[in-house]
Length: 212
Image 1 (cartoon, rainbow, N blue to C red):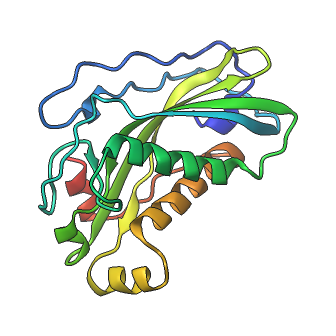
Image 2 (image 1 turned 60 degrees about the vertical axis):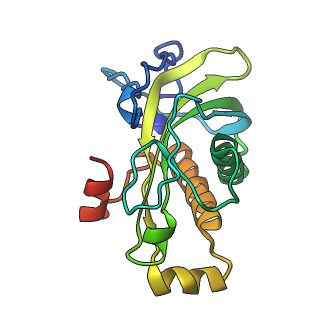
Image 3 (image 1 turned 180 degrees about the horizontal axis):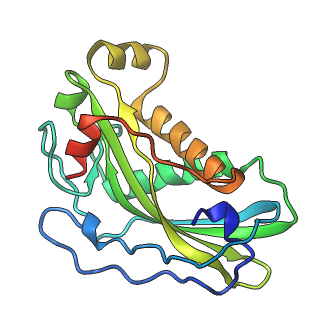
């Protein structure tokens, strides 16, 4: 069920603990959202709190190959703590995407990143690829602390520019970080503000290959 239709159904979902990590990638450790028998329409909301976590169990890959293993692949910042860098991108994108909501019910978003697989240098400067992003989200009513609906796993893939397209985008200020931040803002805006919620686009063979 989509988030937009779940907000009035308090107490039906809760975040579940992550499974144990594996050597190469832990994306199979994501919880699956519960299936509900029915749903009601969500009232207008405002977002008063956003809590983003990037679990340490997520494996970071710095390998410069077209499709490296791991859960986090990120080269849009200088070498450093990739978990913190991914969290900063999510914080910025989700904040930007929720600023316009000004409804009567104030909610909080608990977001857990499960996969953030952007492009390596090799892919960015040749073929391009897919920014493969998955996160889990639970909504809470901030006035009562009660969870609203079931937790939801959101897949939010984005076309990753490569070659001349990447160079042209960079010249316009559209870096990987800028594009992904804007994308996350659009994802959460649709998830909270449209009847069907956010639906992951179909991006072809590279998307399928990237998620095997």
